[in-house]
Amino acid sequence: MKYEILSKPSYALLKLTLDEGEEVVAETGAMVFMDGVRLKTEMKGGLFGGLKRMIGGESFFVNRFIAEKRGAILGLAPPYQGDVTHVRVEGTLYAQSGAFLAGSPELEISSKWGGARTFFAGEGLILLKIDGHGDVFLSSFGGIEEVEVSGELVVDTGHIVAFEEGLSFTISKAGGLKATLLSGEGLVAKFKGSGKVWIQTRSVSDYIGWLASLMPSRD
Image (cartoon, rainbow, N blue to C red):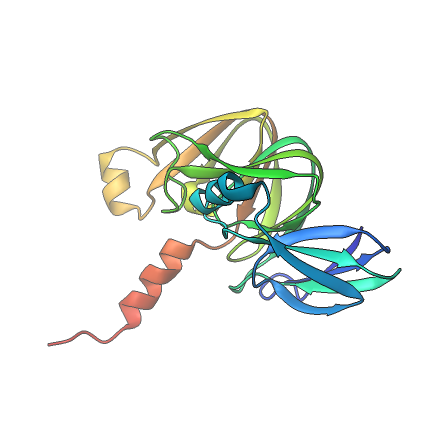
């Protein structure tokens, strides 16, 4: 499929140009505009598949967009301000809960229990597991940057969008007790190995905290 990502990075809009018969799966509510495209809403993978998506922070239903002519156009956007990026999946990709915007229908999207060590940005203990071969479009709060890891990389947990399966990671505090209490830094993920990590330039939890600090207090 041909794609353009417009209005980057603050208010990104994904524009897809499709051949006749080509399909795209997207989150419900993501459609902004379409021309020559038919919409079909379904539970991909049946009831169990819908439940697994809900556990991973995605919607119970998915929308299938099917091109009815050559050169059909589809515009998609996430519900919040931020960026969109394209990733070619060849195997398995892990992403934060709620990051999936759209992708090839061949990809299987489910949830993965990461154990107590996966506490990404207050999203809980569940990651999205994206399996197969195809194109996926991920969204984030803030801009998205791709970082190549060769050895070790430390990332604040509130800034992780996705990472490749070849990387192992552990979750720990940013520093000692004093640093944890005074630096304003919380938990970090220490990635090891060789692969790619996608990071977002803003943290949702930090933004909410900043907004709360501006609210007038009640006497």
